[in-house]
Image (tube, rainbow, N blue to C red; front, side, top):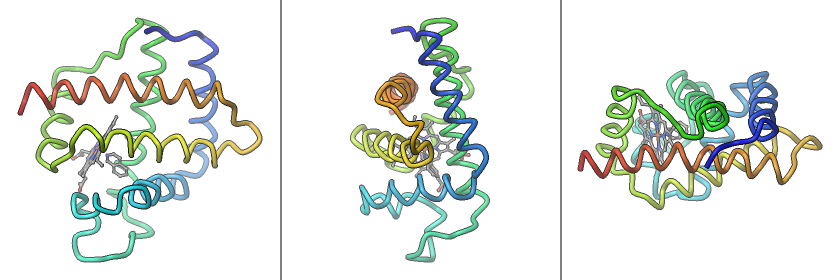
Amino acid sequence: MGFTEKQEALVKESWEVMKQNIPEFSLRFFSLILEIAPAAKPMFSFLKDTDEIPQNNPKLKAHAVKVFKMTCESAIQLREKGEVVLSESTLQWLGSVHLQKGVIDPHFEVVKEALLRTVKEAMGEKWSEEMNGAWGDAYDQLANAIKDEMKAEA
Ligand code: HEM
Ligand code: ISQ
């Protein structure tokens, strides 16, 4: 399903706010994932030798930012083209990484919840149900593309 200009603008607007504090929001996003699903801990290499979430891990930050950015790009594509388009190489790479780490479909709901809660906390007064819905839809369609690729590779 396509996106309206309003939906696209809501996603872009909130990403602009989160961009101002990448260390805080990337850490918050990751912490929320583990809070919702503690069992997901061993999948992440950032936590290999520690129980604590590293406060300043460049890989964690970079990965979290990629998830935010890719969701934002999905919103733009949904408005422009009516669908999420990823290059074949990006899809294959994301599909194989997640397959190899043991990610399964229900995990995508966990990451979605963590993402939406991070957006809500970051936006404060500016948050709205409509903004929430736009992020949720963009994420769902991006997640579907990755899930389909994982099934194709499995
Ligand atoms: C790695 C994006 C969903 C767990 C990655 C990487 C990206 C990414 C960009 C880095 C790949 C690399 O550079 O090697 C996404 C996006 C998602 C998504 C866009 C959904 C739309 C999930 C879900 C889980 C998950 C649902 C399960 C909780 C992981 C793990 C890694 C990873 C364990 C490897 C991290 C490491 O230890 O280096 N993901 N991901 N991802 N993702 Fe996701
Ligand atoms: C990888 N995939 C999904 C979400 C993530 C959040 C933080 C760090 C890495 C991630």
